[in-house]
Amino acid sequence: MHFWRAVLMQEQNKDKYTVDDCFGKFIQCFAAQDRMADGFVFVAQESAGRAQYPMAKVYLNQALSMDPSNPVALLLKQQLDELGFPLEGGGIDSLAGNDEDDDDEDDDDDDENRLFIGKSPADLYEIASTHFANREYEQCADVFEISCIRSNHQLSPSCANAVYCRNMVIDWGFNGTQFESDMRRMERIATMEIAQFRETSADGVGFSWKRAMSTHPHMMLSYPIRNATLKRYVAESAAFTEDMSQRITNQGTIDPLPSDLPFQHDFADYIKEFGSSTTDPKSWKSKLRIGFVASGFNSKAVLYLSHDMFRFFETSKFEVHIFSLGAPDSPLFIKHGMRGVDWRERVKQNVDVFHDVQKY
Image (cartoon, rainbow, N blue to C red; front, side, top):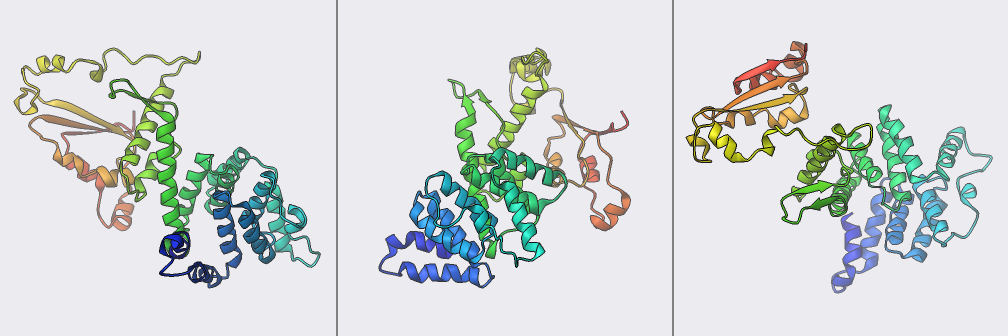
């Protein structure tokens, strides 16, 4: 990927190297992995993305001459056909490898490719989702990516899910270049959807979301995104839309929030309740009770990130309650899988009351 960047930046570095210098090394990276066709497909995709369709056709022809049944190349060919830039030669079927001498495995690959021809991005999304439900992560990564490409990168759920599934199978590309590209994709998707779906009130304080963002908060949390604020907006959109979905009625309206919810009261009411005329918690005469409700107070990623925060509450002013809806980890898992570390017990040690309510 560094060599490809050098290709793109050559215009600003004419006195340092030529395009042929870095492009040759870029292709050699694919040749070393016996993936020359994939290299040419990549260049064709990049060219098409910049509307350089004649150049895209040149490299796509090279890719298909090496690998006639390459699924990404075939989909790009169909996109170029639809845009009015058909390749010379036969149609997709003629490029999909119909020689009578092909072995059974090649025939199976061709049959699978033909199944995707004519499928819309939404159709492919559903197919990929079925693979995901069956825990066929390699397959769903491929089909989500095809859906993303076929939508011209407009179907963001497919584009984001392709990244997630590639990470599930640790498919980070040559020297991690696919992972770098995927992280940039996630940043682009998040930035675009914030602009599209988030609305703020006139005073700049209130906000609403037209829909949840395409990336699940748990996925976004694990990505090394340079702009951490994007993670916050992903979580915000999920929380907002989940709240709306829980209050929707059979008639399609949304019930208002109960009038007695704490955040709908003026804070002055709580000052009176605590018997103090100041908003400084250190001067309050009674403790503020805080409750955390979850099913995941065991060895899960969220608790790994949060189990230590409970010890930072000022015990003289806050009374912390945990309501655990889920079961603890088995002793054998704690002993062998966690090497004796029990996050649930750590939480218990740092809160006032741990309510195990799973039986209710």
